[in-house]
Image 1 (spheres, rainbow, N blue to C red):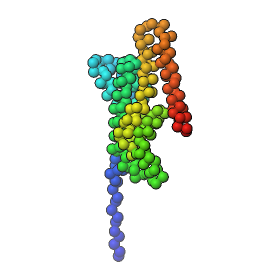
Image 2: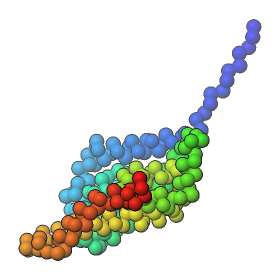
Image 3: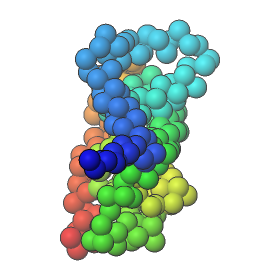
Image 4: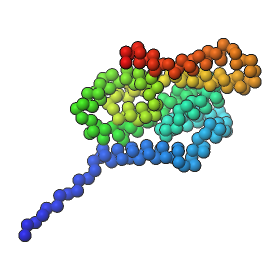
Length: 231
């Protein structure tokens, strides 16, 4: 009678285990925001009231909320508009930019720590050349994608899965989001100032028309960038 040797069960790799955690984190973050009572506390009204109770710490609390919100797939327009409405066009821009940088950095490190190893095992010869190209031209790639308004949060996590260097990613992000962030916060902040003053005559002021012009122009930035690149 022949003895049959049983093959040992292959244990999942460390990269696979991290990837499962990464997938669970993404699914959990989206579910938390969309399908649990937490979403009731993440409206503009609820967050605004919460920040009012923070007093002098409101800017710090806001930037922390922005950073966490980015990692939890909270809409950036909600967070940015809230910052501009509460802190005004200029301080709002600063706090939004810092919060966005903190959030994008955190999401990048989550993607890099939990998903990069597994992503590397899936990259074949055809995709490897693109991965290598991103490593060589990381700053230009990130800057371009930010300027054409590539979806913010998916890009944060996605770039962590590539070979892009963090210094290229953070510098490309920091520069690339300045224009869009300023335009949006300036537009919302300007309208908020007019609303607060109650002087509706200011609606026909140069500042208001300029902010509207910048806001409309922001929608053409992606097309302008693509046309310059000849794509």
